[in-house]
Image 1: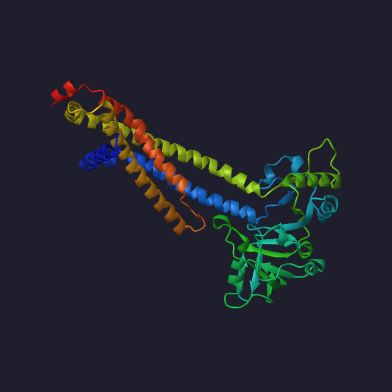
Image 2: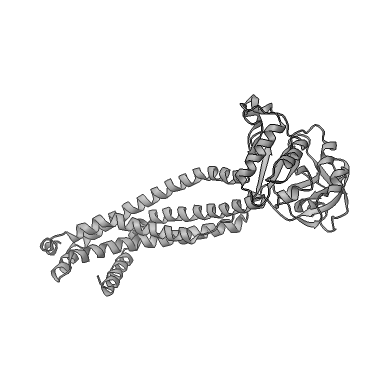
Length: 418
């Protein structure tokens, strides 16, 4: 088929659709719904995937974390053999540094998070903040977690740690609440009734999905934390590897060192857990798996309904234009010309639905990004191309039978049709 014939067939297809606007609009509604769902959900997931990857990098791409129990687990539901494991200690981190060539440093930190019973409080004058994360850290903590970058002042120093000084580095939202119009550096706040000097303020970070982030953290020297909260025995260790060593090598040396230090027999399983920041990505993939499956089902149903609608309207069109088909065949049109004409009409119909679905999906993604900045929906050109390809494919698949039926009509019968 020549370019002129193709353009002519396209013009005929568009004229047919314009002549039957309402019927055509209702027919492509399923395609619009299917493509809109794909574009909107894919845009949101793509944006969140980028956010997760960036956050993993900022947590330390060459860092492993040692915990007593598996992270993100409900302790009460764990077996007794895991709940009864020995607590990690500062001495474990020191032994790791001494015995593992791949380790650059190992830093220990501890948390106090108690929102339900006796909540922590920071107070300055009449202003106060509750519901925040209080964390005891060592000076190397900021190197292990680039996410905790200091915007003003400084971080916890070796002198602070060695002398258990009462100093604190606070998150941006805490600083804004306590010191809306004054410089927080050097000011003394009351942290659970004890005086602490503010020596630094972290860079703004609202957290993933606007949940708790660095903005809601207050960090004090681990030695001071241990003195203030002796009942809290849970410790966590962040281990950074040296350049030139893979994470697998680092993990192997770390596991060997901890088993020796904690006297784990060779036939027993580890009494600790080693994870990397990638566990966030793995957890996110598990969470989004159900969403992707649901999206696929909804999109599939929408496209199936749209495809059946396209086939139905094309069969009706073939019946209505039987006489036209006979005239075209009488003046020399081939079967392939008739087939292409009706296929092109079906593809045009579903393609218009695809374009509308892409535009509506992009508007939904933009609205989500505007209303909820924590969900950075991003319309990927890949998904735009895929959405259009799917819509065209629906027209091609469901439009072939009506087009083939039109092409095989007997011209004599067509000319006699009324």
